[in-house]
Length: 208
Image 1: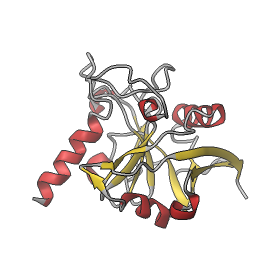
Image 2 (image 1 turned 90 degrees about the vertical axis):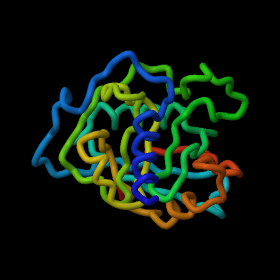
Image 3 (image 1 turned 135 degrees about the vertical axis):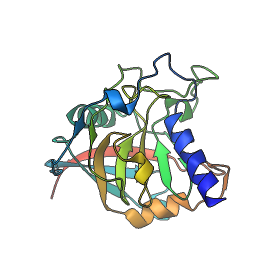
């Protein structure tokens, strides 16, 4: 049963924007950056939920030397306020995931077959040999097209070897991992929280 659950999650993350893509690109066509240790930027991302008293804040260091394009996109969207009001729409014992524009208050889904993104061009794969350990921040994508990361991201709650070299890693939680676990533990139907855990804002701040 545990193995079935794990496989199901891997499929769900691969199909994060549920509609499929005409591309069948696989990780074999994406360059993998090897032997490069992540170096934290001089700026961090601070995720502040609307109910900070219940869920606290989450601080993330960002790795421009590993995934410069995804870090640039994440910072850009955060500064533009894109993530303000978005919920953690996928929550389970392995990851929490957010970034779907269809979850903003008053949003109209773009399509019944596709979760909303930022409307900006997709970000190409920036794979590395960094391991998907606890607290890693990765870029979700559309279907099997490795070059379709956009605005959605996830945080791992434990070691996820099946994600290694299959999803762009662009950061890691450095403070508030207990808050990530709190969000992961909320009551839910399937993977969707029954009561929305909504992001108030994501701030980009100088690293102290």
